[in-house]
Image (cartoon, rainbow, N blue to C red):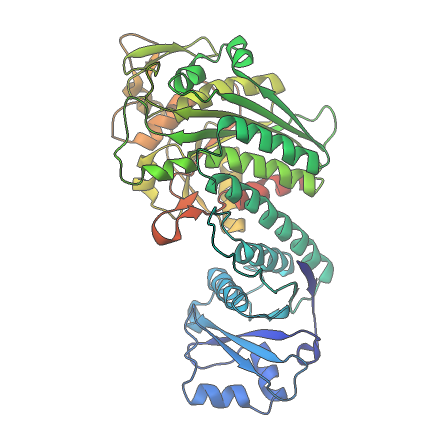
Length: 495
């Protein structure tokens, strides 16, 4: 995809399609008004007849209007003017991009009215244009044998109008990189679990590292994991014939002595629940239980593609959780890499078991910050639905960084409390603590469990169980929280 900017002369731009916005009050935006003037008031007459209501999520393609260099104009609804904000702008552009891809239009200029500058400045305009275009272009990597649809014709997108082209172009570069990273996450997460095994995930990470300058990979096989004394991780994997893998992905773009940011991803390539077997409905979606791992790999590819002046380490604990004859049983006690013992009361609370050993491994990097990313609990979905990821941690400034990154990236998270009272629910008669604390506050007690392995670290936990993928007719990976992580890394690098 070729991106650029425009600042004036909309009606004379040498593109195939102009995209302009219309409010529900049948009011043309400033850009739409300039197009209307050039074509002799055709747009205003159309609105007066009620042919396009301007509702959010609606589009109308017009062809061969006089006075324009472009052969087509795409109207996109902006909704009610007084309610128009950045979210409405993003919806208008996403809807328009989807409509374009149903045509053979190869080039367009985005001229959708913007909300106030503090909501969408030139940099964030460029970033959103490129990121949303990339998301619209994404096609699920399905294994269907029928004829594939023709690839999209769209090849060139101009963003505008802009006052500072340098800022907008920087945003376009960043947005394109975020879209490419989200594609990495989505492709990995959408693969079926019989293909995307722990071994496959490790090999794909190696392959990605070869195509991104500055990335290095080390993969620990089962004997190496055993030497690291990762007893909790091994307890989860022992019921499957698929061997575990522990992936260490490093990007060194900062000074040698600069402490890295460590991202830790849950990589359960399929989660049956183990002996604590899940209910059959929607169990197929447990192939998405490695979305945290996929997001970590995606974030590292983004850091490398943008040559960020930052050191970043990605740790991925990759396992399959199955109810085989050797599977861990409720009541078993495992010894973690930290030496702490865990009574495993529920084998379906496996993500925290592999993450606790990965968090301990992170200590050897003397990190500036540690963030784990996991589809960890259904309780987080109950608490926050599918709109926000949950965030908790032991370092308030780090948590605030993630909250602000999510707001800027339109990939929001919401802070849940993490106070000492929740630790009482994890008490065990037979080990240092249990891996579950009952139904009450389940997302928080899961984070509390992880917190027992992060003393002395600046740590935050992202529970993406409700945001990483969609169910139903639109089933598939969303690519979240790659935009949030990207914004976090961009701002860290800028500091």
